[in-house]
Image 1 (cartoon, rainbow, N blue to C red):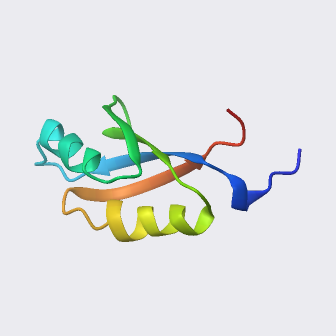
Image 2: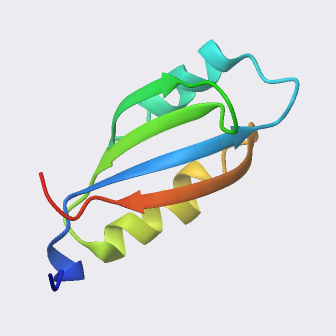
Length: 85
């Protein structure tokens, strides 16, 4: 299946937080970002899963690089782009 990247509305961001982070406060910080629609504490290799909705790939890039990764609690992110609803 060919995916038209410019029309993708949703992505999921797996986040590794810095070790001393209060995860509940971190979730609150994430939810202040307009594009973040949901955020959850998760178990195992990652600390937080955030669902983001954007209008296009340019906004996705901006949201991740300029908003999420700039939060002081973030150590690393992995982005999963949703191909279908």
